[in-house]
Length: 84
Image 1 (cartoon, rainbow, N blue to C red):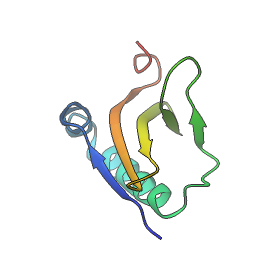
Image 2 (cartoon, rainbow, N blue to C red):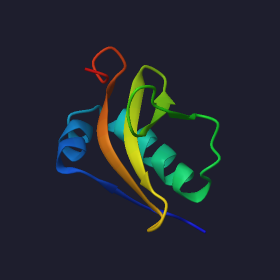
Image 3 (cartoon, helix red, strand yellow):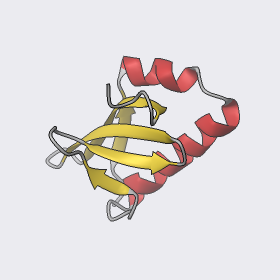
């Protein structure tokens, strides 16, 4: 079963600022994890709530609502800046 995924307004702005090729790659990958929540690239964040998805030098930070089967993307950015 495919999960629904949504972007917060902040994540949407961060996504809009990226190169179109990278933006498409991120969208395809988030869409892929919405179909398979057992993706090996998903890791639980240490010291905080949420999960991260690694795409090269970029990270997608998201929350999972297991009850509603929704992925809420909260941050998208370069790995050197995303955890601040």
